[in-house]
Amino acid sequence: MAHEKILIIEDEKDILELIAFNLECSGYHVLKASNGEDGLVIAQAEIPDLVLLDVMMPGIDGFDVCRTLKQDPKTRKVPIIMLTARGEDTDIVSGLELGAEDYVTKPFSPKILVARIRTVLRRAKEETEPMERLVVSGITMEISKHKVYIDSCELDLSSTEFDILKVLMSSPGWVFSRNQIIDSVKGSNYPVTQRSVDVQILGLRKKLGDSGQYIETVRGVGYRLKEE
Image (cartoon, rainbow, N blue to C red; front, top):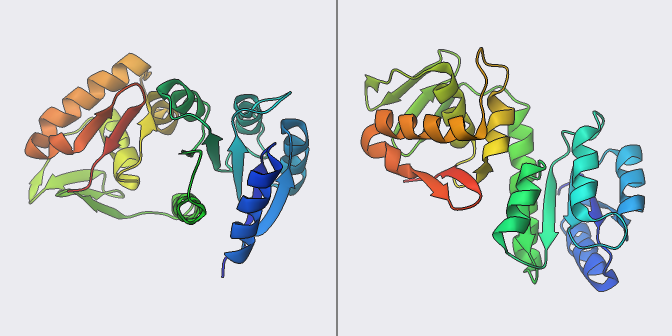
C-alpha cells in the first residue's frame, strides 16, 4: 500500500471528500484544505508528496497557490496536479507554465485520478534517482556517456538538443510546456528562450530522421514524445 502524503486543496466539499475517500482507500495519507490560504499554510508546514489543486477558488485561486508553492524553496519540488472545470488550452497552459506536472478536467473518474497520481509520484521518484539509459520509439540515450543512437547509428546532437530530448524521453506521452523545457535545460552555456525551443525541436526532428515524427507538437501547450 502507498503511504505518500497528499494535500487536496478544493473548495467544493463534496468533491474534496470524494477525492479524500478514494485516496485513503488507496493507502495515501490525506491532508485537506477548502481554500488557497489554508492550503498554503498546510503545504508549507507538512511538505506533502503531492498537491491536488483546484483552479477556481475564492480568494487565492489555484494559479496563485501554484505560483507561491513553486517559488518557495521548501515546496518547489512538490509535484502539483491541477483540477480544472474546463479543458481550455489557456487553463492548461497557465498551470503547466507555473510548474504543475499534470492537470485533470472535472468531472473525472476517481480511479483515473488515482492512476494519474501514481504516475506523477512515480515520475517524481524516478527524477531523484540516477538514470543511465533510456529507450523510446527506437531512440536510445546513454545518459552517462552523453550519446544518442538510432539503431547502431550515433547522432550528433548539441548539448541543448541532448538535454531537451532527455526531458521528452524521460516521460514519454507527457506534454511539456516550453517553459518547463527551458527550466530543465537552463544552466547550459548559452541561453534558451521559448522561440529557441521551437528551433531546437525542429533541429532534433531533422537529426532523428523517421523517429522525429514521434516528437509531437501539442497546439497551445508544448511538446511530447509519443511512444511507438
